Image 1 (cartoon, rainbow, N blue to C red):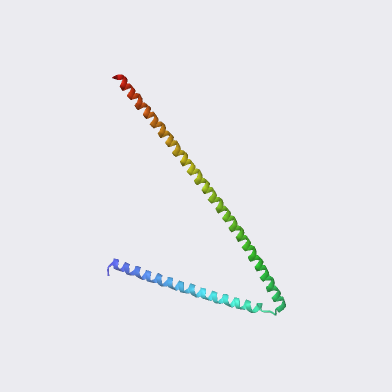
Image 2: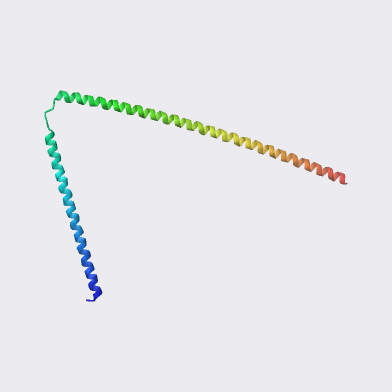
Length: 144
């Protein structure tokens, strides 16, 4: 076996070893995770067991009712807020629309003005042309 081939073999072996080690590490990690999960579950169960005590049913009912009322009030408040927001939003939308309309109107008027100006200019220009033509004709007449 040549030196190069030997080197290659060694490299392969090393690669295999590292891969195997990586796998081992992963397995260990998984095991640890599982163990931790189990311990957490156990702790939770213990806590739950500890919590159990005699409860006054009347008191419980009262508490529940109170909570329900609180939640209902909260919901109402939220709804009101939402409505307010919606109203504000719609008003803003209307305002924007109005602004847009105004802008459009302005733009349209500007365009109209421009058109008028152009027409005026054209008319003036044509008048000037006509005058020039007339003058030329007169000159020609005098020439003969």
